[in-house]
Length: 249
Length: 247
Image (cartoon, rainbow over all chains, first blue to last red; front, side, top):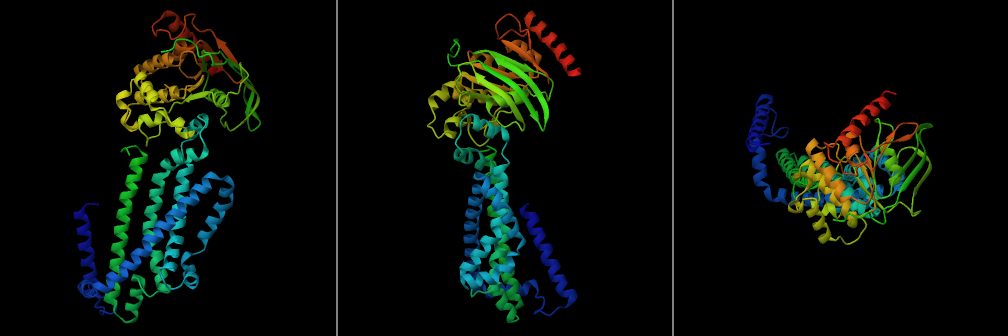
């Protein structure tokens, strides 16, 4: 996407939003105008920033932990056929349980602080990261593995020197999905029970009919997600470039 | 360059039946001469690559009932080098790192000085730090050949390694491979009668029933492309392969 296109899309979006406000004549406590939301953003910038920082910490901690856990699981599944046979059905089954439904339980178990939100984020990104990386690890060219076997390779060396580098682009795909899901996990956790964070602030603003503040929080959350997705997109492209040998270490 | 046969290069004999899901793919008795090139030809799907995979101890997706033995009675495993149609270079590694990958995969310290001299031998010294993506198809196969040489195994299995190259590069690669693999026991699976006529001490034509020896030219390999006995062998072999295919 070019910068000009992004700015044009933003202008069109804001224009449509303002037009909707004019056409429907909705009161500001139902649909505030872009200008009103901008005002709320400026006036409440400190409280929004404080809460955004909390949510960002939850998202990043969840992303790091979820990625480490997903990578470790995918490697374990690849190294052990028994683990693969036993764990893959369990992993798929856990996806049948809506993670959002677990939020109250997680709050009960881990309290109202950051921990329950981080666990929620970890749970929501764990499957896409594990699944994408495992897929990459097991889709290695058979010829490379045959060659490694003929050379007398150790299984761990085959994993680290062939399968992992080959699977890096797949890991990048999983991380891109995780970057979109992680903020959802953190905010849902905050909705269920929290004393800080953008999700908490949105609920608080809603309860006090400060819909402009709620929208401002939502916009900041969206911006955080876009920034995160962009940063992980850059990382993902680096992983692909490395795996394809387009740049040397 | 060594011109003496590798004293460790044994003859190999594969004798038995290979089948997939109850149906017999081939029934063969194949002997590879010690320190010689054996070229294995035959119609697609007859099981040439399966023979190679059986000798290499790789999964074939079927069941083999028979024996595979070396003339020195020692195990074949651990004495093999392998080169396939695809270069099997790791795209993320430099040419140098690809050449020494065997040692790294075994958890051993790689001998970079020897790798450099082998890259020199295959004409890739100036490209040691490049990734495979920066090389041409012929250069990539030369890097793969350097990797085989680095392993320094007495038995080398070649599964159509030159078939994806253009004619000129293919002829160059045949000459280079014949030179650097001289004295090793080599099995070359190929579709190309010209390649077999140039390179084979022994030529075998495989069908579902048997692997039949085909008379190789009396001159030692590698033979000149334009030599009359090479051309005569090539054309007679091609005609025979067409008959086998038709049958």
